[in-house]
Image (cartoon, rainbow, N blue to C red):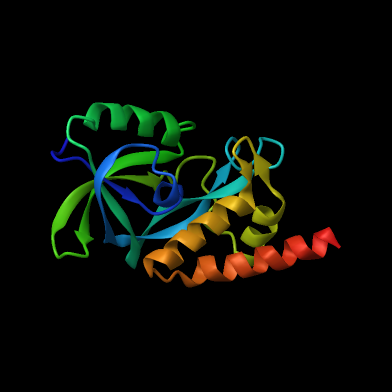
Length: 182
């Protein structure tokens, strides 16, 4: 384990880290992109009607902007345990140490959760419209799939981080949900 422990957040960790940190800084991860490429059969969907959640998917020319959290001193083991219980529920994520560029100019190794492309929950080939259709109607033990999308998109906007795919998905999912409500 690296000391200090840094964790890279790009989805729900942005708005619900679930651990104590002493510093958070906007960061960029090269060679990966944020994508709704993992079906969710627990938190945002069910086995019968899977939802979609974000994962880091490899993209040679891509990058993902998010937040690097420096874990509070003395809490690394507790934080790792908490994150593993939360993120490795089905082992569709792989735990990896990836180098991120902090906005302040420093490079740090950060614990990151990336998609396992060989896992049955990998769904990286879905077009945005198909993603929107799933997100608009899915619901799991943590609530509606759309709430996960909206919270992530809203938090990215507050941080000044643009993500065109998520912005489009948020707009489209709201349209679909309004159509279904009428």
